[in-house]
Image (tube, rainbow, N blue to C red; front, side, top):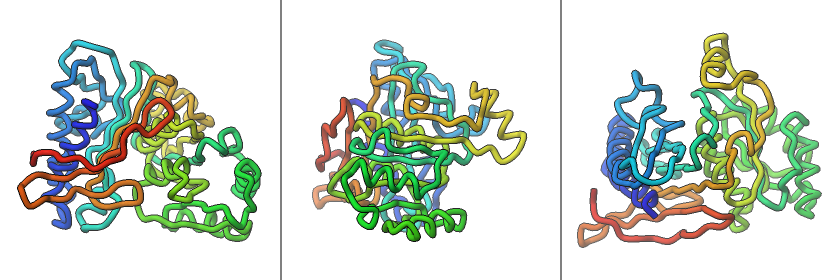
Length: 307
């Protein structure tokens, strides 16, 4: 619940910048609020995925130590404003996200592209990122007891995914396109009410680790492959301890421990969460999600003071 307060305050701090067209100010406000609240938590916290390296980011940088110094040693992956472009344009599906696991558990994923495939718990073990999408669709449909024609595949609307879209449609599946924030799409595969069976595509590697944490808590499945674009990115992988950058990464490679949890608070409205709303008495209403121990512990609106 300490981390719930962290994501709430990050979302509230970003709220004044919704629709203002300034991604940097929005991200800065969320980052400052998130770090301030995390410094108050009794923990030995270490950022493994954050705003960049120490020389690139003034706070929430990789390897920054957070907390009071008392309590458990944990790895922390954050994105204070996931979907900054969406939020700056006043569009839906921006949120503040945090993934936490016992120390040494979260993959130090470099900021580069990652190929991803994700499913909910009913299709766990049915996916193989090295097989064609059509074969994965058949396997997932079988695991879910569905016809492929009833399978919903979430794919980010990017030119690089046109072949995936065509393959899914040719196989008979339904395609749901989204503009940004594939963390939401990955989690959606584990929530029956959203009706998403599979997420595939290429997106940010840091977001992949955060999404994998949420799915691990929910009993889902996630596989990935890093896609370094040049020798510099390959060397960065090796520097961060990933000796074989192109190897297939299972959910247990991305999140090594079951001792983990995921927290998110909506900034703007989206399929998982409602955005921040300012009430008439000056307080801010937030909607948050806490996933831990195989279930969603909290998915309700709460009142929080304006940050």
